[in-house]
Amino acid sequence: MTIFAVVNDTNGMIDRIVMSEELDISHVTNRAGESAIVVDSTISPLLHKREGGEWVALPLPTVGEMNAVALQELRAMRNTALSRSDWAEHSTRLTSSEAAAWAAYRALLFDLPDQYPNILSLDEVTWPLAPSSHPKPE
Image (cartoon, rainbow, N blue to C red; front, top):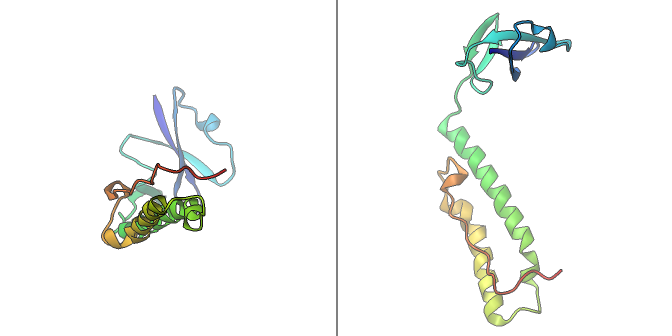
């Protein structure tokens, strides 16, 4: 089995990895602006790029960069959960205890980013559970 890295000739980044029984690279790429290069399993599209005819390691993200991305993802997921529960905020069909449960759930969602200021992965998050006593009206 031969492993080819299909490289964007403009930026040196690996566009895709192709594994083939054949050594002929003509079937691997026929697009202008890309090259197919035989590689071994130590070359990763996430960790390497082609520069000056050589493989170079891409810099690993800093902890600060990982934190910023994780917080952005957390806020996006939290905002989706909040928007899906907006109906409960103004519902007249909920009992007072149901309304209180939904308000508490939404408050927990709202506060999530403050609870994880140093987050590096969404795997660290313990998500609150939505109240199950009253389904969202259709």
